[in-house]
Image (cartoon, rainbow over all chains, first blue to last red; front, top):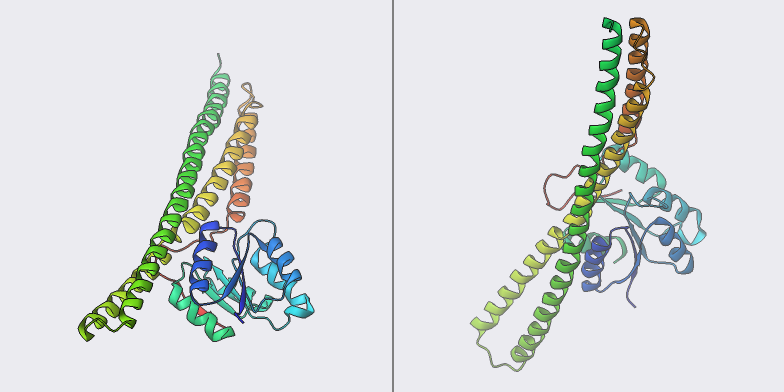
Length: 121
Length: 181
């Protein structure tokens, strides 16, 4: 059965590229338009991986990660940030919040697929 | 008219004009930025749709090629050529996907600029409001009013800057770093 990924980003065009790249690699991808939407979707289904942007309305990426890590079902689920942010300060915050990795936009589909495969197979 | 009265009038007029004209120009800047943002949004929708359509067509064509190759009709040279062409297309697709993310980045930059424009408009509005109370009778009062306006300007500017975190530092559309913790 295909591994499932929750892709959270307020940019529709970015989500389109993420979905295109990961579905081509055989993953089942569900989209969320911001952190709040992502959290609601995560509560209804346990995804194999969460890929989230940082700067989003209603709930940002770090807040989403902290909220997910309070859920028993998301203690061990890998969460990767996919964001324009690249500072060490933000990466440290991401790590402290519970992120497992940090990808800086723009992404290359092949590299994205490779890292996802490394994390969830 | 005394010198002080003239000075007060001129200072009031200067600050009022700065506020008024500045706000007017900032309104135009904001309008142009919003228009740019809408156009970029529409462009990426069209580009995205075209990209998907082209990719589907190419994939369908590849399926036909694979079927022909499976029938064993093609020479080894042709098979190799087609394999190379397929790999080349894959590379171009990856490059296109990376490039098509431009709208996300530029939209964030435009959004930050629009927020700065709104903040500047508030600052200029405050200068205009503050200027109306400037006395034209007393040099000391004029100096005091100007110092007060200056102080508020300083505070508002710092506050505005702190609210405008720069999330996008990219200057090229090359794929970014990846780090697993």
